[in-house]
Length: 137
Image 1 (cartoon, rainbow, N blue to C red):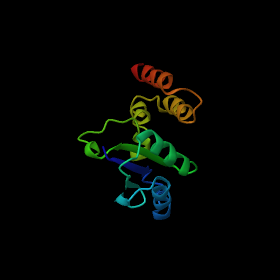
Image 2 (image 1 turned 45 degrees about the vertical axis):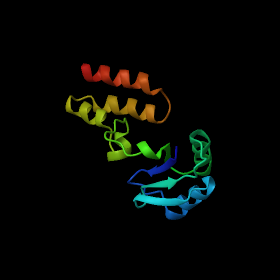
Image 3 (image 1 turned 45 degrees about the horizontal axis):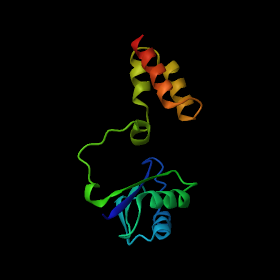
Image 4 (image 1 turned 90 degrees about the vertical axis):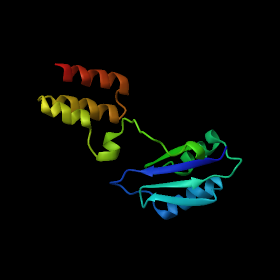
């Protein structure tokens, strides 16, 4: 089944330049770069023999120093009907859980835990549990 690789940058950063997309495309032998949003996201049309794991590894290696996410998926099911994700800071440049905490006066404490989690100092699940406990009161 044909695969598509989607490259995504934070909208605020617009780190996905045409030269970067073309370099990534060449690294996996893609036949085309299709822009979804200039500077933010593009699809790479992968060769018929492309394997998802191998292609993902090649793209991550090629883009290792860049703030670009890589998603390799089947072309047939690429267009989704719904997206569920914990990436609010990526999409809207703020953490919704921190904003909820602000409403009940615990934003500083919750935001500190969020920052530690995003910096890799604590794992996501324990950080989430700790923040939810603060929201519960």
